[in-house]
Length: 65
Image (cartoon, rainbow, N blue to C red; front, side):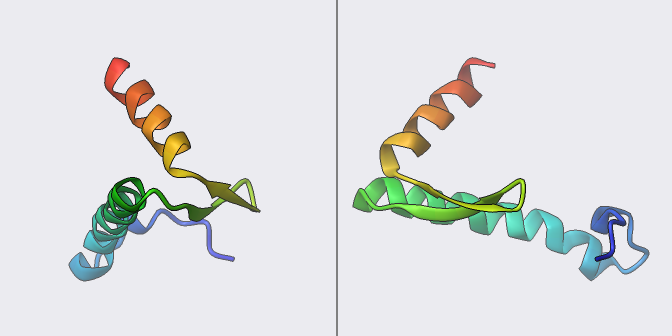
C-alpha cells in the first residue's frame, strides 16, 4: 500500500480529495448523532463501531482541546 500523503499530490483534485473525505466522515458522524445510530470506522487496521454517544463524547473532547 502506498504510504505517501495524498495532500502532497501535484494533482489538485487528488490533493483536495483528502479534505472531501474528512467532510464526508464528519457528515456521517452528524447523521449518526441525529439518528442515534452507529458508524463503523477503521482504527489501527481494526473495524470499530462508534455509537452516537461515543461520537458525542469525542466531539466534547475535541471542543475542549
